[in-house]
Length: 277
Image 1 (cartoon, helix red, strand yellow):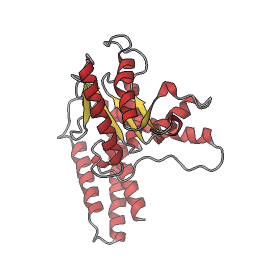
Image 2 (cartoon, rainbow, N blue to C red):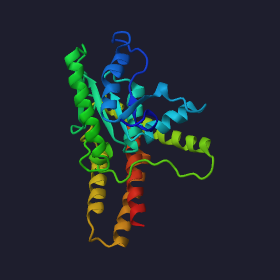
Image 3 (cartoon, one colour):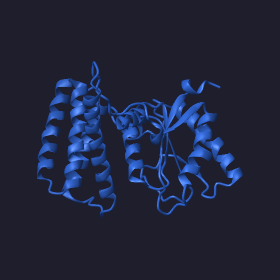
Image 4 (cartoon, rainbow, N blue to C red):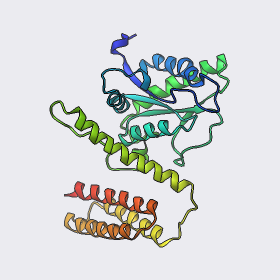
């Protein structure tokens, strides 16, 4: 066994305090009886946000652990907004994460390939031993699949996004500036989550002109990225044309969610232009 101080860390994303609808201390028991032992069995040291106390910049330390930890476990059971937000950050940086939830938790994601383990609400002895082994195996398998296209719990891989988010490389002691830039990234992730939740709670508008135009631009962009034989000058010209069309459509959008969709489409086109320039 590796010494505790030298063990790799597994960052735990889960409710820290008691949650309405769950018995007092429920998630503390999940952490102590299921998550912590499973991490030890897999050779990792479990670390929760409330255990991160390296410096006075507590929030910065938590963010560093959230992003830098080689593996993370996220408990989706309570559908806690902070938990989902931290998971969103972890996913934006395309870092490996194991998803778990209490049996009977309603489905949260519409992305079918995402996989998660379920544990029993009663947490009986034999059930706990079984989920410990399953979670230990999942930790090892997820860590081994990091960076591979077969990593099913990577939204970046599943959506074939070009690049994950990155922390800017700053020279010298500029933690406050780095923290500020990271907060800007977090705001973008929060906006995307809010937009997604908003979209799920309103009737679909698949036949609207805006939706049709968005799908047309998205399909055209994917074809341009997939076509390797097209000369770069011609590809760049078409990409810039798509950018102008997207910007025009975005400016005409009165709906906030649709406006956000086109804004992210512009980001995709901009990345494609950068890759070809």
